[in-house]
Image (tube, rainbow, N blue to C red; front, side, top):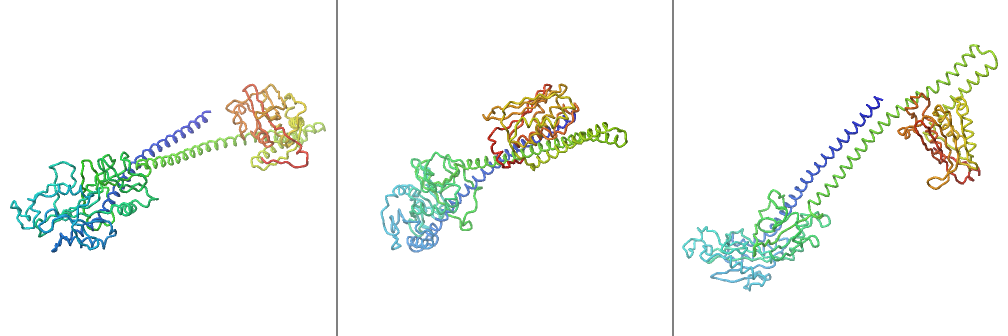
Length: 632
């Protein structure tokens, strides 16, 4: 008992330890997955912001050749600077990948001693002609007038020319007085220095604006305006750039939109998905201005930083021109590019992946736990089976030794000549015969059990009457019944229909139940056999053959084991009741092979009842000469 308790304690300790380890692994896996998800989110957002920045710089790289070619007249001035702008534009068109990107080119000379006015480049003659300000440039015209430097500014005059206030234009280094991103704050405007890199854009049109210098002219200040083809941007250039940086439409992870976000209006310049970008209240995963400082729009979740940039095409080319936006109202944002993951957000996509990976990892841990549990359970069962087998060997050895001792003793007396008369010789012969029959029955039972376990025993089912089956079983067990002095009470309901069984095998089944009742019947020495027909729980008729004893009974903890091979209850072992542990398992196997079942009811110290349930059906097939067989 102490050893059994110790073994159970070790087994429960092992199971508890494994459960604790698995729980710890699950907690560590959860925390690790959370950290990986957080890092993945940050990395995806950084990559997304870098990609948006690269797309922005790619557009700047598209506009840089146009700006550079138009400025050649300022870098290498000729006799007529206006004509140089026309030649620069023509040079750009010949080399440009999208020559239709610039639809119109204008030059405005607000004050000039030679040819003041507003000029438009004729695409047919490639010459500038005097023109009127287009209606769509009216607001820009007003803004450029506000941004004009004062007449006293030395930059109005050629190098060396003395300004009205006596300062040389060559030596003048004062700051300008206007700001291209004017937001309505009067007296705070600051003008950019009219260097060759100063380019601005009015995104509402859109039109590029450049404060140009005209050497050897007095005054020498002018504006260069280049109207961009919005349809080409929307239908060709933006889709190409988005595809280059975000992939094809059907394989794209993000929706991308370019919107013009001002105080009172919001319009979609380009969108990669239907309706994306229209709702200003939906926060995107990343957003930044297309021109000016790469700061995202107000209310966005993340900001693009220099640390998030990744290499972009043409990174070894000259640095693209920086183009500043011209804004009109406080709160105007101009063009901004926004991106959002197609699952709603980067966080949602990573969360979905996190839960999917977590479920997979927990499933693996669950399989591991089940596997470990099965290994532990099988190990426990294997130890128990080994113990049962050892008990079986001991029981069989005892069962074999008893009849062999009687046979050897009787044979020895006969051999020694002690038996001298015929009657005693016959008595000794009967002893030898009965003991040999007991050995034969034991060996046959073992062989039958082995055959049924290996699924190699065949049964030939034929109609048989219940009363004949009971009589045959009692006849086979008569020697055991007489030797123990057991009283058998037999009750068979009249006119029971026949059942389909293998007569010999089913007789063996009942014989095992009778022998079990005799051995465990206790001091009352009574066995009852009752046969009747009743209705089952499935409302089908069945024959019930019950074998009852009034012996030691079986405890509830042992009831679930009585049909296991080699099992013998501790009560039977302590009472020194010998047996092989195969009788009941073999009886159950035979009953089930006949289409029936074997049930048990037992109360300790009051006795047990084993009942065979056999179905009642049409038995005409059993008499037509057809061999009905069943394999166990």
